[in-house]
Image 1 (cartoon, rainbow, N blue to C red):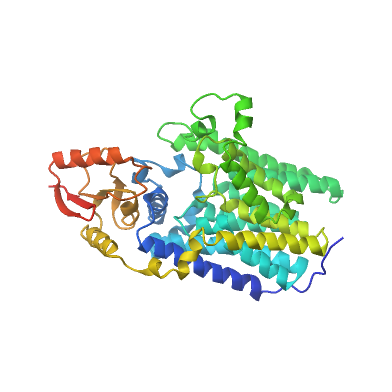
Image 2 (spheres, rainbow, N blue to C red):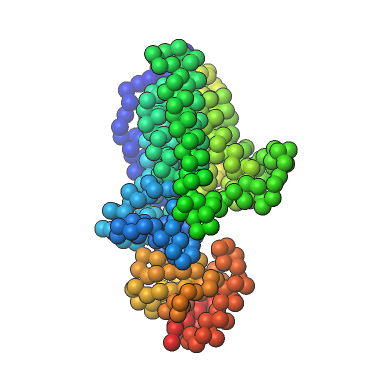
Length: 463
């Protein structure tokens, strides 16, 4: 029995909220790029790939290594749809704006569904919580990633699934196979939910068969990409991320099971997800769509996957919020209001923690003397040059130069320029400080001369 009487669906509220959040995401992301906070890993990598697509070439990414084909790293051919836009508007800002628009688009289906379930007030809360959710904000305000496509696709798929529109859910889920290899498991989860509901409802001539077919397609796509497609493009002939699951060894099943709940930072991740769903959303079967992503994250030996930083939780936000909306249809008004209040509180509390608050911080919009020095250094490098750079400086150059990382040994005569920021806090990954220092010594031994050495900024030029 439906708790709320579904009113006429509006058009202004969902699209208005989406436009507002798209503007906020764009302001934060572009301003962070302007301040030199973007990184070669990952903005520079994706710009090199999309730049190659835009010129009709294979996605060879020098930042990953000589001749490195990016489809040997992750399977994300869908990013090629940005190539025509990039050809017209070349530059990293194009990717950041595209990501902001894609992420904000997730607000639309969830707000519409919430309006049908509970009216304009519920829709306003769900729309604002979606746009301000910590996982989406963290991803949208940072470097570009392929999961920008997954966030709206998952929002539309989960909404369609919650509204019992199974064909629409399947059609929205299928493009996820082209976003990233692990999302095939999420597609399989969508298929299994469709099959379960078809069998339980006893409706349709085909019964659970279409859902089972979708589940099989998702599972088969993941197996195919991980065991065949990615190794065929990978320079080592394998899938580079197996070692992050086994930790470089052969853990027992008991060790893997124990790894799910330890260390405690994983509890924070699970708690924040549950709180974002107002805890009430845990009653919805739509939350099962989170299991594949949470599974590989919690089982991984990579600590970056365990917490609430980086972009990894963005794909979970539309799922947990769809679970909340779905649960609202089967609860009493008092519990519904409590769940919405908890979800809104989580969004409000996390706003100062994640970069969205930078919009109203005056210091975030100033141009410091050091930033001016950095721009002058980068301006000394001509377009079309070959450059070895540190992580953050590299991200500023990939749109107009051939860029590699300074910590890696050069091939041939070496790059024409070497640009390093010794204070870059991201130098530990992908480049260790010691490796960068060693290469700087080697470059100067080769005869590279110092053009700029000021304020921990160093620019070398090949003789």
